[in-house]
Image (tube, rainbow, N blue to C red; front, top):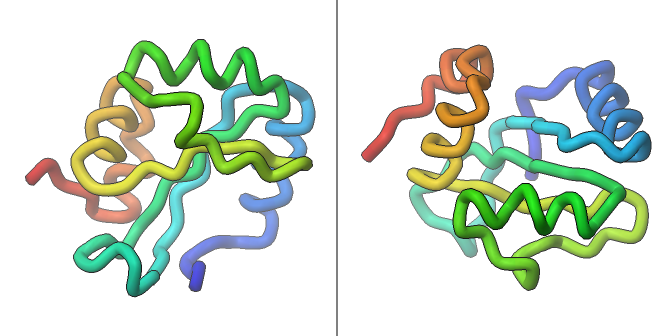
Length: 102
């Protein structure tokens, strides 16, 4: 279940992904499959080869991409989420969701 997200933010992310940009969207999220994780960052791009190439620099595997036909994306959690947001200078998302390195 996703929450803590404004409709405008989701709309902007979707448009950016459709345009072939590497786009970040962080929100609160609860899923029993991922205990201890209460946020997720979706990193999407409609250009899947571009997304794969971007992910390589962070050790992300192509098979980890959620192959949504309209919005392909990686789901980032925990330390990986924090490390990549830091590297991508997404300090606003780190602060907004009070993310910390464990």
